[in-house]
Length: 86
Image (cartoon, rainbow, N blue to C red; front, top):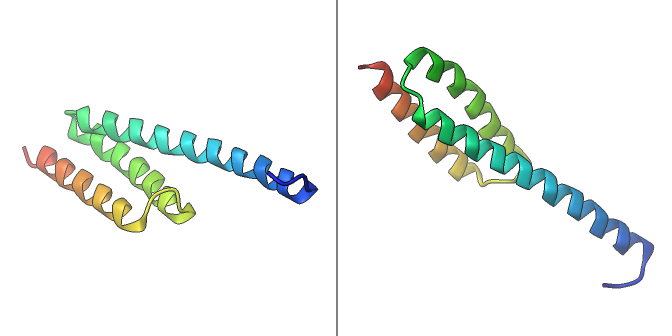
């Protein structure tokens, strides 16, 4: 690493961003996992909207790819629709 003030600052910023992205990604993965285990359609419907908004936020900020976000939302919606139709 170069000993320039700007480079040192960039390393600090990248570290903060990496930690934030990892936290947001992990909490979203946990929310997805918890949503998949729900059996009550009403509760699943409420959680689905929050999980989808989290996924959209991750895609918007570049933590995950937009196509991956779309695939996740699609699969979660299919699971919810199957649960709701029972």
